[in-house]
Length: 185
Image (cartoon, one colour):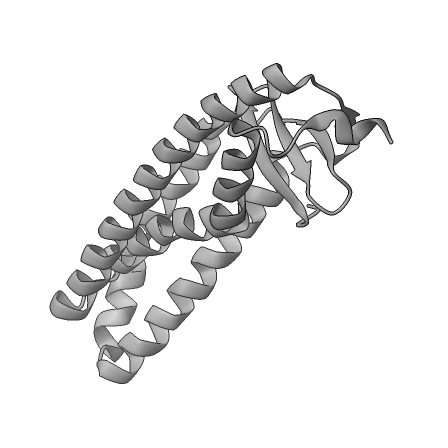
């Protein structure tokens, strides 16, 4: 994934518009046809397999092992988020697009609402992760650690989407400080 592009607007599960601030271009990337059922099946398999992992963990549990597992969960959560984010878009479909200023402003207003929902979902994921990690340290069970690992992935995905630069960019489009006449160069 080209990480200099800032997500601008997502049209359901069809495509996402990205803004390249350096070149002042807007790009459209199609979404891959992903099976979220497969994603949920993997999560369920890991959670059910966690009973086996928990039996092993119970033999070796302790503060040092807990810290190592916690750090590993954060790293695995990051890797999960990176894989999901990188594979969500079909790179071969990257096309430059041009919109007039009113259309861009309309997209920006819709995108700001999408952004707000994504931030709330991320905050929910972070709260769940914190609760699960705290539960892991207090009851010494592997299942809360795994749930926390999956939940923290939402935070990493939001970071990949550059939330502060994205919000600034959206405000620029809404206030007509940025226009896509830029793409005609």
